[in-house]
Every structure is written in C-alpha cells, then in structure tokens.
Image 1 (cartoon, rainbow, N blue to C red):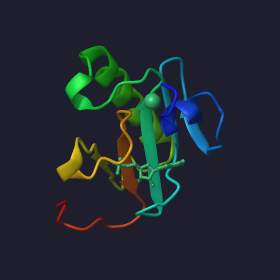
Image 2 (cartoon, rainbow, N blue to C red):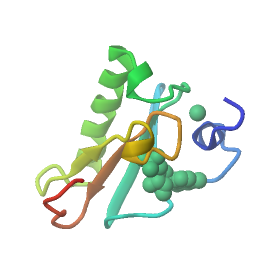
Image 3 (cartoon, rainbow, N blue to C red):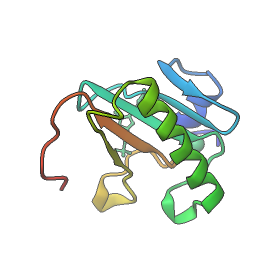
Length: 111
Ligand code: 5GP
Ligand code: ZN
C-alpha cells in the first residue's frame, strides 16, 4: 500500500535494521525501542490489523516469532508479544505488526 510506512520498509524504500526475513514475513528493530530488544514482526502483504488477518498469516508470523526468539537467544529468559488494534490500543501504523519485547524484566502491567 502506497502510504504505508511498513510497506515502504518491505520494499526497502526506507531503511530498517532487519533481523529476520522469509518469504512471507519480515522483522526489524523498532526505531523507538521500549526495551533492550524491541523487534517489529510483520507480514509482507498489507493487512490493516488483527481484524483483517487470516489464520495462515497469523500462523506464519508466530512461526517467525519462534525462530526470532531462538536467534536472539531470548527463548529461555522470556519475552512479550504485543499487537495493538485500533485507536484505544494506540495503533499508530495500520499494517498488522507484532512487537517482541525482551532483554530485561518487563513491567507487570501491560495496560
Ligand atoms: P504501534 O504503536 O502502531 O503498535 O507500533 C508502531 C511501532 O512502529 C512503534 O513502536 C514505532 O516506534 C515503530 N515505527 C514507526 N515508524 C517506524 C520506522 O520507520 N522504522 C522502524 N524501525 N520502526 C518504526
Ligand atoms: Zn503496509
């Protein structure tokens, strides 16, 4: 989608620090990290949010998250996966994405 910042990252029109990619999924470091490890995982096709996501895409994303957790060596220490949907959740980029947060003990509260 033309005006989507994450689609531009996929097309390499804007730079990003890519940590993982396969045929369907790409993952890169968040530009404004909230934890020592903060990775954004997205499908390569433009899907607005979880409301539009199909189970195949969700499955591929979580398969990628599993691989990234091993790659980043956070599978033992633990990590958090978050997706925001819509205004009240604070979704600022309307391209389905999952945050992986790790690298320190995370806050107990998630809201
Ligand atoms: P949201 O608030 O929509 O759930 O999360 C969007 C995330 O994307 C934010 O954490 C924000 O820092 C990140 N982000 C926004 N624009 C860019 C960008 O151009 N590059 C990278 N690497 N991250 C971005
Ligand atoms: Zn997009």
